[in-house]
Length: 323
Image (cartoon, rainbow, N blue to C red; front, side, top):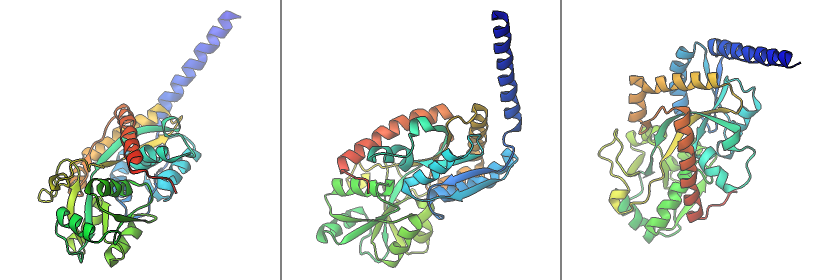
């Protein structure tokens, strides 16, 4: 019996290798869906749509961007987990869905066991912006204005416990000001009320907000990072205004469902990284205030472990609760 079992095991191993090799040669065999957990017009949506055509060229298949907003990106990830784990449906994973939400209670999935990191696309520092009608020109003036008007200055975010919300909470605590948080269901809704003056401020990425700076509707006051943005070297950091610990830099990346074949993950990582390195794409990312990355899957996994711990400390300090 042992020789038969040995031959059977060898045959199964050979079949597995053949299947793996076939997958490596045939993936992708149909269009790839990029699911974005936020509404159209937000920074993650813009990055996905910027990259999709060039990625499609490398993969030899169309890359379709699909928006499924809600629950801090969790709805989008759930849709990926419900799909066949063959690499043809992936998610634009973010700080909120993988590093913030796990600290806020029960989730419908476990980021560490249900997802496979593919690559980190870019880091995304926040900028403090205000409606241009607010009588402040810099961070110090904004702090002074908020102190003189406690509870009367509102700041918007794309939702409760999002990176923009936590950036505002960090700023409030360190500046000693009473700002009122107003959560929305997506960046576009928050931006609409900010532009109309119903809220006065927001912590947002330049990629989704600086078009309004260029039109004169919004005024940037400072970058919530330890260094200035390469694309906007004249915009000071909040650190330079005397608040050195306001550094809520977020990120965007790509994740696949568990059990996705390693060959599919490797192909996606390789081609996405190649897109990020394309001069026209990297220049656009930098111009939009982002810092291109394009890490390996293992580098991204290690980064996620450290990033989750960082945001856990922020949430505990700000006493943020899930709604």
